[in-house]
Length: 330
Ligand code: NAI
Ligand code: MG
Image 1: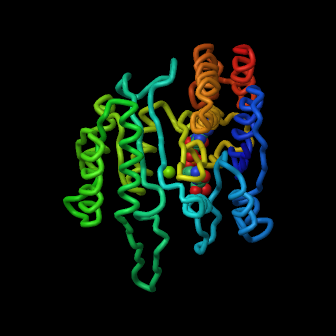
Image 2: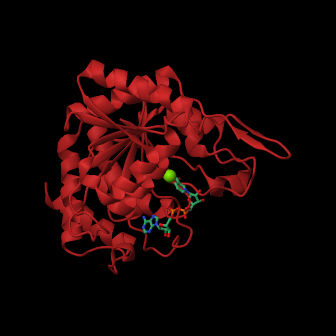
């Protein structure tokens, strides 16, 4: 297994080494290929990612990604959006469930997954900036909608066999197209479906997250709802994600490079460590993934947590505790 490692910028440079140290404790045969990509590289070379970087990544099986700062350049194109397109990572999968001892702002019991279309929608990259107007083309294709709905149905089959299709079909024709395709795929798979308008979903997710299981939606709606979901689940420092395609996969914490705390050694590494857990599940290493989950639970139960969770431990102390539990489970 060949793994491209992209720490990126800001706290990406702190949480990714922490997550790798936990992965190393499992002693698996994984070859790591470190790559410098992001704002730091852009400042140094004028380019955040090169064609050569993309070729190296395409020789790997998957990517572990930290976070990237957006450079202050109006012509800058997002590295992540490019990677998702180049590797055809069409499904962005973000699970949310309460972790041990973490204080939650509202409902205490929920367990849902957001399955977000990751390559088209509002992030199609088709944009035009004019003097007095700006246009972004929202692209929803049959193929893109079918494959994301199929992913959601596969996930639902291993869970509660139900999906919620989130859209704004009352206003957007592209969304009634998306909704109808999702309904067709759900019926074909024998999966029950509900549908919900995105604004009402944003409201209900805060009040009644326990009602949902697999939520499938378009790119921008999924991006926004998943940050909302992170707040419900206790914070950005805890939430992991997988970007999956048919050939490649990329795993990353949901959070960004957090310039406000970068360099202070207090970033919560759990989101990055749980991204490693998702990567191990994707690799079929379910037992090892479970070990990481338990080690994270132990750290939380023992109160070894960073300031975002009300603790006083450093990034390093949290990752060392988790690494210790992983080693102790041999
Ligand atoms: P952010 O996620 O970096 O930070 C939001 C808030 O959450 C900050 O107060 C930060 O300190 C806190 N936070 C985030 N992760 C944390 C962690 N692991 N532990 C403790 N606290 C944590 O979002 P923001 O500030 O909007 O963006 C900062 C930069 O990151 C921007 O340049 C943005 O473009 C980029 N970004 C990159 C992403 C990526 O690479 N996937 C995703 C989101 C933003
Ligand atoms: Mg986001």
